[in-house]
Amino acid sequence: MKLVEGNKSTREVKVVTRVLAVNERMAEQNRRRFADKRVFVINMMSSPGSGKTTTLQRTLERIMPEVRTAVIVGDVSTTHDADRLAVTGAPVVQVNTDAFGGDCHLAAHVIEKAADAVDLDAIDLLIIENVGNLVCPAEFDIGEDVRVVVLSVTEGEDKPVKYPTMFRLCDAALLNKIDLLPYLDYDKSQAIGYIRQVHPGMPVFEISARSGEGMEPWIGWLKEKISSKLRAQS
Amino acid sequence: MHEMGIALQIIDIATASIPPDMRSARVERVNLKIGKLAAVVADSLRFCFDIVSKDTALAGAELAIEETPVVARCRDCGVRWTIAEPVFTCTACQSGALEILSGRELDIVSIEIAQEESHEIGGGK
Image 1 (cartoon, rainbow over the protein chains, first blue to last red):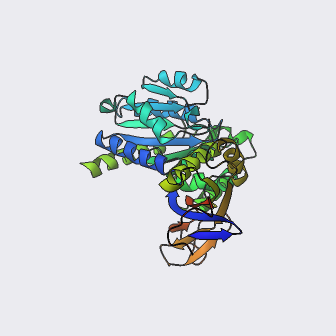
Image 2: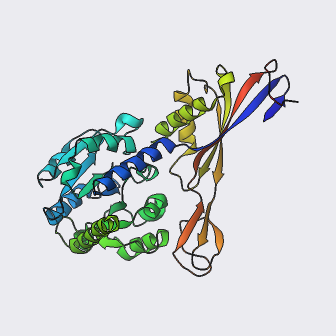
Image 3: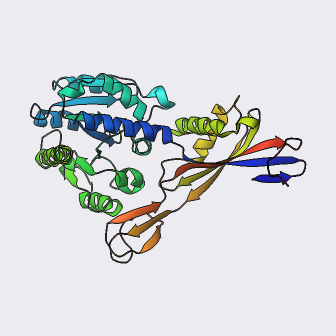
């Protein structure tokens, strides 16, 4: 196409491509690699301070050693999360997140490299703890099987409607810190109502990672997801 | 915050899309389609793009962003509507089984390249 404007002209060249096509291709490659190794992958996302690492710790304590699990932790600069998780005995890989022009999410190529440090033949489950952020990680597929979002009752009830993309994208939500409900004005049914409004039918697990309350239904859901993937593959 | 990474990808894709006979040309405009459900802030993207496009063929180029609405179709009753608020249940039958038809786009549609009149343009008038 030629557009003429005075003595200058402009030529329009059609491109029609996803801006994140490179990431999406890499994510697909990761997904095939994990499927070949019969590893189930969770992308765990949340806002900062929702108790994601503690939730992960309690989850590991309950599923290991039955489900052999490794963890990839994305953190902006510290190794605190990795140190806390290593106590559970699960292999933990810490990754830097600044390689893709931002500190805010994990991209597929970061996971590709991090997975090299994990013995994929020795595990059934890989949990990827994404960077605490409800916006950016939603845009980056990393090759996971399911996405889980953790939120807590110390945040606003309206998180789901403020970040609808994240809540639409996820397969399950964990509402954490329910042991604190007696001390807060948090309207739990409104929060769950908002989740249902944004993503009807998505399972919501009410848990306290601190006390262990409510963990069993979540663990049950997770185990069922893992075994249904393995059944589908065999 | 990930707009910087997205700006870099736009520059990579646009640069690779410049036809071989126009390698020294300057890109004047990048036409993008960004859905309302895409996690991208247009102002932030423009700010990052201006910084990382310096010293590239896209320096000074305009990012023309067409924002696409969130359009859903109900899998149960087939109704199609535009979602203006974060409520993802069917407006007709209240079903939650939706198919999102648009709103997640983050696409480069085309680039517009400046060229001198003296250049040969295939099929030009």
